[in-house]
Length: 165
Length: 419
Image (cartoon, rainbow over all chains, first blue to last red; front, side, top):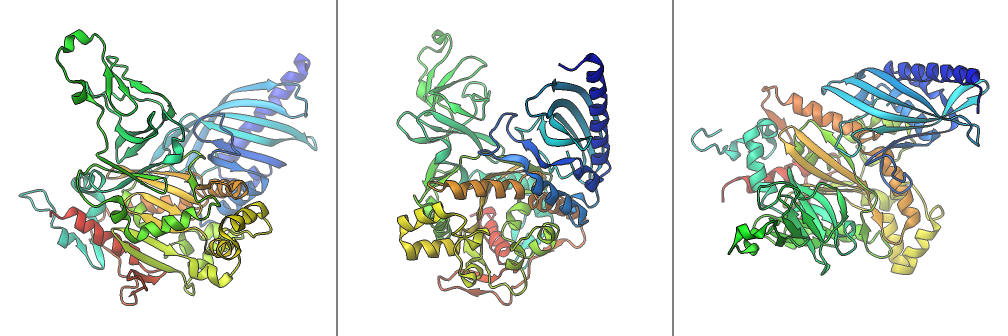
């Protein structure tokens, strides 16, 4: 176990990291957001529940690191019409918890809840999710080795989700 | 609208090279479509492989109606309406499962998975009642073609085979991609909602004019060979099979490449297990032909779209509210191919798909666009002068021509006009 003091320091760093990620996403800073990933990052938004096997079942997003890069490059073209014009976004991140302070592989398991207000050409849409991260220190900086976004309504028919969630 | 009867003068709304914008936005026309198309003609509901074992069920739909597809104890596939025959409560609240019977939570009426009413609570109040009169509602006719289960609410009318007509051959072509000749729908569905009329989706599926523009962002950054298939110099074809079924036939381009599995951006070397199984199943020559031609790109009217590597099912919920249910096609006996099909499908389609997010954006913008009343028409004349008949007598055109839309509207008018 970490000491109470180092745990508080870690929690503070993690909170700052998650807030920063949220701001980069809300403000469509695609390249800065991409830099938050480790080289083996996995970005996963399951469909039809939280515990499906993404190797067997359809997910809304199941990106390895190169597909994360492709997603960002498509957004950067300015011709990804679903984000041209871009959605206006603001999200709240809360309920941040350290889920495992001493994992075997050195990654830090963190979870949060998010509530995202999207205003797009279609309409205003409210999204809610549980976010599960594995964070890792790389060269002294926190990075995302995995991010799993479990939309509360991922078993239902949902509108286009083309911003970074 | 004809104010006397509420029936629109279809010949004034649907012309050979243009259709009226109100066809997409008028709530009365949507209600008429439910009656004349969705609750009458053959509609794709589900696939037999989704209920592989006795007592399996999965909840599907025909338009806004919830339909339970069951496999009963005798192995027969039933399409039951999810509505208790007592007070209308939905008898099934789970998307899938295995159950011999469904018990309504309201008054505990219980139905066998073939629809029979097998019991109600406190039966002494129903003295002399014939239970057979109180079965679950059923989709009147149920037929399947190579595992694809269709339902029709009309007691009479064309058989499924007659309805599929020339398009049945595309499904034959599809299943041959499996070394065992069978498609399996096992990867779960993404459900992508759009605030747009269902016909914008239907018409876009075989519109070969849009990919070069709508999908320019992904073609530009991915190392995609798809763009060229839809270019001005492409030899690919659009085809109208009649009965509203339309196709983009990419085989001329794939045959020029003359490379097995090029249709899927891969090669025999990268899928050695699949290639070996195909050669064992079909022989070297036929396997090579199948693997060069690839899978079809066909829109079976009104709601089943086979898009080479995935399957879409279009569901209309309201005049401006539609759902695209989409999953990766899986082929029996082809695990290495199937894995890539799932990966590619997840990248391309669904709410966050590289392709479908942009397609769906177009559907929604078109729907809002046609609310403007001038010009009144949607112009569908592209390629009208250069279309021709193929060797089987089906109308074909250049891959970017609007042969499919014209075919869809010709059939639509037949269905909507009073007999």
